[in-house]
Image 1 (cartoon, rainbow, N blue to C red):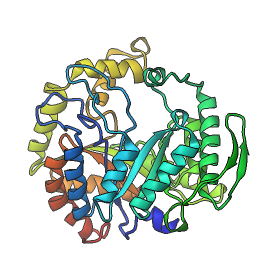
Image 2 (image 1 turned 30 degrees about the horizontal axis):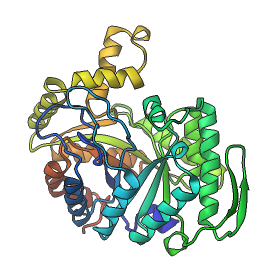
Image 3 (image 1 turned 90 degrees about the horizontal axis):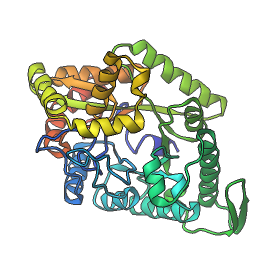
Length: 369
């Protein structure tokens, strides 16, 4: 798994792109240049990222948009078939599929993952989620379990998938939720090692699930307290070692990188304040946020702003020096990598790669392509 966890290169700091399979990506904005999310733009972006040395692409598992003036994330590409297409069209890029375990039979899911893994010759990764969006589960006719049971099911589901990937043949799986008889599945994952697995559980139960089972754990990072980031990374890694496992810790970021600090701040304000899709933001807050009656007016507006600026994630706004410094600080705190989102991925990525990646190379955090 070391080669898988390293994503096939020696970059000390891994950089990926998050959310490009969805219309508008992660920017809840009405600006006309917002991300389309079409297959053509995703393919163009993946080839651009592959050539530039970006390490991975991570999709969002979204089945139903949030509405608002833009129908935010209303058009999305299913993530495993998306990954297959991108893996077939790239050479180095690791591409993840984001999969809601309760919505898919583990036998067919394990087969899909192996197929993607063979297409990419070992470059497929699994982002496993147990689900939270009740609207989407209702659309599938699936009843959402209470919080603790979601992870109990997820554990059983993942155990079954890993067993299917193993050398075992004609086995039974007799669990609380899953009863599988005479299971046989070939081929096995490419090259004899299973795909990289990630999770971003935020609750204590979700965090424990990720640390027990996954190779990459995604968590939030503070802009103002690097010591807190370092502590949380250290605690997660130490807990994983108690299970005899090594764990890499990642975070997500929302990047606006322009030639000057003022240009970056002005564009960020233009997109996520002046032209935010506030109708969509309020729908998101209603589903994901804390109830208004539990917050002061200042806390509530801060919550709304947080969702508008990329559905959460670390805000990184500045010139190339400032953006580089903030990303490097994460690595110093122990983060293995960051998954970035941009207002328009394909338009903004070339400048980021031309200006930020060389700076990270000079710091010894990345290797030159």
